[in-house]
Every structure is written in C-alpha cells, then in structure tokens.
Image (cartoon, rainbow, N blue to C red; front, side, top):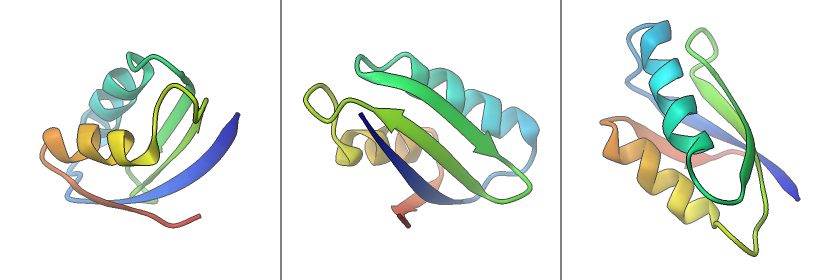
Length: 71
C-alpha cells in the first residue's frame, strides 16, 4: 500500500470533495480517500498493483477538476 497526496484545483464546496471521495473509493485497490475542500487536496491510500496514480488523476479530472500528485 502507498499513500499519495494530490493537489486539486476547481473544487467549489464540500460536496465536490465528497463526490471525489466516493468515486475514488469505488476504484478497486483504493482503501482510503480523504479529500479536503479547504486544503484543495486529497490523500489516497491504494494498492499500486491494482490501481495507478494516473488512474486516480483520471477519475479526479473526469469529475471536472484539475489535479496533480504532490507527494
């Protein structure tokens, strides 16, 4: 398991954060997602053998937000 932080641009409210968390937690291999509207970031814990950080970025961007890995 790895834990990565993603910077997210474009969230307008806490509902945006909840939407991202829901979609990320639906991904096979993601065990934890904590998105913060106030910090404009998400922390995701996932199994790299099942999901890549590129796929996580794709899901975030599919919801209409820009994102990048920060750590």
